Amino acid sequence: MNSGGEASAIKVRGILLEKFYISGGKPLTGKVSIGGAKNAAVAILPAALLADSPCTIHNLPYIDDVICLADILKETGAKVNLKQREGAYIDGSTVTKYKASYEMVKLMRASYYLIGVLLGKFGKAEIPLPGGCEIGARPIDQHIKGFEALGANVVIEHGVVKASAEKLIGNEVYLDVVSVGATINIMFAAVKAEGSTTIVNAAKEPHVVDVANFLNSMGANVKGAGTDTIRIKGVEVLNGCEYTIIPDQIEAGTFMVAAAATAGDVVVADVIPKHMESITAKLLEMGIEVIEGDDYIRVRGVQKPRRVNIKTLPYPGFPTDLQQPISVMCCVAKGTSIIHESLFDHRFRHVEELRRMGANIKVEDRTAIFEGVGGLSGAPVTATDLRAGAALIIAGLMANGVTEVDNIHFIDRGYERIEEKLTALGADIRRVKDGDKPLKVLLGSSNSAR
Ligand code: UD1
Image (cartoon, rainbow, N blue to C red):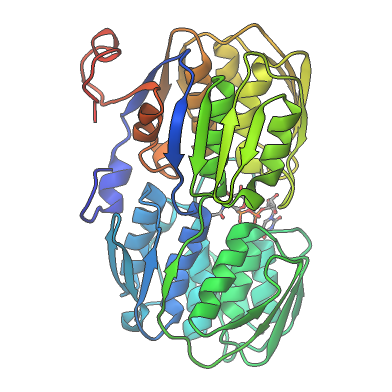
């Protein structure tokens, strides 16, 4: 996306033919600033509709998912003005519709937050089942369980979730699985419900806490976010506020891994080091030097990382969203590394692509076994989802020769100006539109393709 001005989701989603060309083998060096958290932003934007007056949101990442969501919110009648670097203005007082169209909702997973928000605002919501990255079955039964516990009647008809309630009344909700989406969505339905709601076995991710802080800034009464029990006392009115989103744990982790993988030396700035502990711990195990400051982390890689075992878990465990990026390091680590994916069924779809680059990986169900090889070699590869795309970029940065990453619209969903940030760290990465000049002309030239 280009800087400034508004963008439309349709325009953004239309860009399907771009690729990244990466000439690998250069260590990343320098400083990179991390943007606002995607997974907080895609919850906070719809949550702003709960207020009776406008909100201004700062540190919003200007990524495709946010641009797309802004368009979905406009469909409800909300006034949304999304400006890069100036933050977003959202006025939920103009919302009149409790429905959203399939064409928009299918584009992103987080559109499910509109169910909780519109149910909380109007006692009624009709939202098609969400789209998003194909990383396995992504049921919303726990969201529905929560809405029903608050007294809503929920049915799914022709792919549309229809939720309604005369009056939402607080209750205790025990989540059978720790779910970020369900925890946040139930908070949305409960903030204006009558009485108190308790969410037991709640997700503890940093963005769950950020969303709770945002709701409280609008006048809600949410306590315990960040622990496994969240208590919400319903209030009658929520008011607009000004709020700044926390740094993105996953973008920060991606750059930490990219620095380590290229044996580079990078200061990953504007982060909350506490949120990065599980990633820091694994990089240290791999022999990487990680130095924490107050709001930055410096990562200095080594030529040959040590082997590691990783199991993805809800926060504070190792995030599933960084499993694919760090798996690239396992491809070249000394010895055998094992990664177990606990959350999603299909989060090893990038493995086939890494094999094309020379990796030796065996996948058994949700476990991948990596036999470290001497190095990766550049190849044409295809991103199958957002974090798989990030992993393939890191693989390209590490590899000998040129890597061509296809399907980069997935990457644009969650990373703002990733090629600009990497270029500033010394990477040779170009965004190339279909029909642009051939690769050999682009690589090594000073003109960015975009
Ligand atoms: C969110 C993140 C995503 C991240 C994931 C796990 C957003 C927009 N996306 O996704 O980047 O990978 O958390 O940290 O914030 N589950 C159920 N029933 C439900 C809900 C979830 O069984 O009703 C299961 C899921 O299949 C999965 C696990 O619970 O195995 C965790 O999913 P959840 O935390 O809900 O993920 P999302 O909110 O979809």
